[in-house]
Image (cartoon, rainbow, N blue to C red; front, side, top):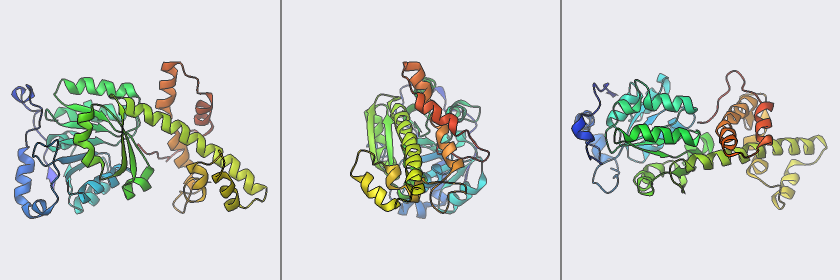
Length: 332
């Protein structure tokens, strides 16, 4: 099914003091045409208000597509948009509703998850001419899952507040494998009550959901995570390649590291997930393109460190050592 483009943002009367979103006529009509499927699904409730949550996803890449699929499996009515038709068609076949723009997603969604790449894309998706805020209803929520600078989330929240729309930053860790296995870690910043409204939806893709404090703190935590994770991967690469070149048995090396201070997820899962390869990384390990793409997500950490006067020379050097390659792909 396809959600038609909304013609206008909700009228001014809706914006005055309305904290729970009005049920959109589009979805009500859609439920009437497909009532059997909707009636049999596990209807999720938002904030104890007795309303079924409609989940929206903008960005259906390595992370967004499995997250949307998990929401469907969790019984959520799900509305999706991506610039590419393939993931939209795939999710539509599973029961999702296709939308023609972020604006169309927000017109019917109670919680719109933004899973695109980088600060500029997040700003465009939320505030652009076809963006979420052109049609988002007062009381609805924008959940920013992208790795961005904390100030970007704060800026988006200020703009959204004028429309009565709430923002929560909820960056994620675990990669595509974690999204597909529903074992992501959510690092959330924002109002705690707002997190509790979103928690059941987040739980469809995440095994861990942490509240780090006020708005922007989730993005700060993601910057910390990316800094440490990327440096661990490079350290594991150099150390384990040295071990192999010297003729040591990799399994025995990992056993030793496991009981020392040098152990990390990168050393534990080196062959399966983090060994750098020249291929696509599909047969195990991580391609150099994927690693270079991952390092792009260090930019928010480096910018935040610069603003706070924190020296991060190793992190900055790491990003320079692996410049982005054509066709490189990073998780949001």
